[in-house]
Image (cartoon, rainbow, N blue to C red; front, top):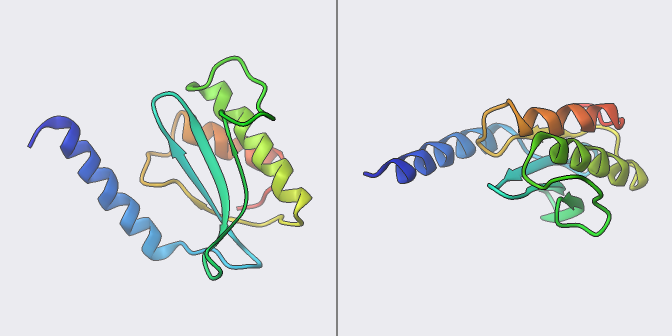
Length: 120
């Protein structure tokens, strides 16, 4: 098995383990993130209804940052998702890191969302 495939397999296993424990409801939705090489995406999801309540990414028109694949971009997306969630009346969420390690861009997004007023 080549290295990239092995990394993807490990991430998938971590992601499945996290999703067994973490689920979003109407009162406390799930803040799900995805980080690609170029962009960072975040969405607040109600798993009971299967709906996305709000979303933000570095590809949005509302995003105004210097780059798209760095920690500063993740901070901007974290603030943006917190702002949009609060506008929808959501203050408490559960965090789904999507199988990614909690450091770098993932941590920057989470910290910015907390600064923006989300509790998790």
